[in-house]
Length: 89
Picture 1 (cartoon, rainbow, N blue to C red):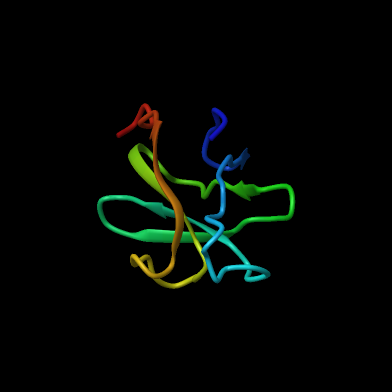
Picture 2: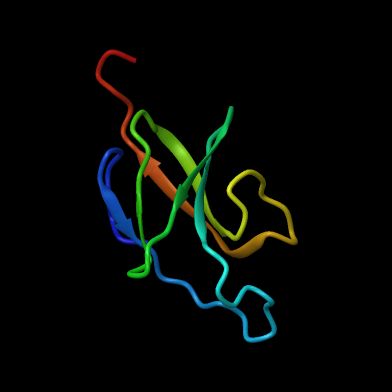
């Protein structure tokens, strides 16, 4: 994952396992915080928008489902990202 900030886009680097049944399915970046999971579509260039309002440690998981992260929906990851806390936090 390239360095980024909330509200920008990030290029993701991952391989889809050859034995995966994921061929042709849309992919999503799941941003997992301590309190919620936010799903963002990944485009053909393997880029995804980073949701605004993220801070602290966030885990990013590539999934083929836009509503849940499980062993069966995980394509790649997790990767860890750290975002600065706002000055008024």
